[in-house]
Length: 367
Image 1 (cartoon, helix red, strand yellow):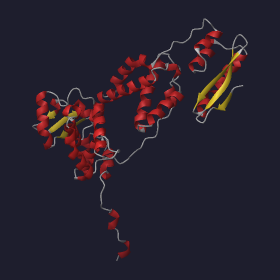
Image 2 (image 1 turned 135 degrees about the vertical axis):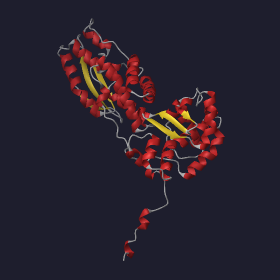
Image 3 (image 1 turned 120 degrees about the vertical axis):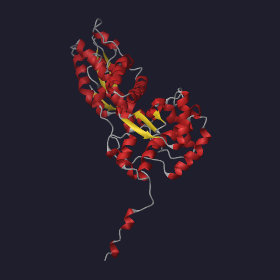
Image 4 (image 1 turned 135 degrees about the horizontal axis):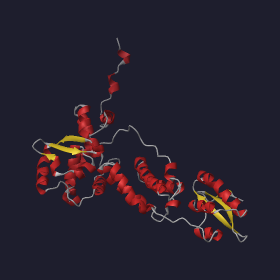
């Protein structure tokens, strides 16, 4: 009787029967938007149906069916009232183990990013027992995220979920990590970074004074500091007075990948940095890193700037314009904290130019 049927415009379902010990049966359905996902579990469902019809279902078969979410706990107990039904566990129970692993294996910045991702994943799956986190449910989570995020960000989501489920496997909550069966999404490689063009810079700096009230009055400083130093958001957030060497006009910091680097201090930042050193902190302690990005996007839209510009575009602009001004690539690499010159080279064509190199060709008038 087991079969896959077209279930609506959006998906399919498996129709099957669970034969009960009293001689009756229950009609069962397993729906999905992915026909291939159903085809993958079809043999297992056929086996459960056949064994139930023969009254040969073992406790192990029932536990497997429960873990696949094709039967319920109540149905399970109709076969064995004393069966040891697996206890339900949720992702939040694994938080302490996840945090310990993340802290020992990641940089402070990456650890904070991991915890932020963990919050999102735990919230999404909070009503779902770990054993019911199937490939289909994970794909649904990704589809939901894909409407507003890049493939790179979504891949980070999946990597965090994989780590959670690795812990679940090690604790015996599930036998397999379903997230490991899902491939990462393709990511754009070697794309030209989007920096601010000259006209956009004029609009940005002309409009900054309208938003002095944002981020406890620190929005303007944050924007100017990011674009004149090329710091990442996390690096600015972690900046402390002892990192600032005003007598040298330098910022000494440990950046991404625990890489130490030195960045010059633009003359326009000296006065404000001096005042912040005196007060004992660089950014207001109540500012959250994510609020900086939200404030930037709000201001950017108000000023009519391109949606393709992000807070990170300030760093792209710093790097691109240093190269455009003739600063050697190796020196820019060191300033930016890149691990490879190849990364820095991606910025060499970020600023648009009106010069057409091909105009130098003159094949028709060669002697």
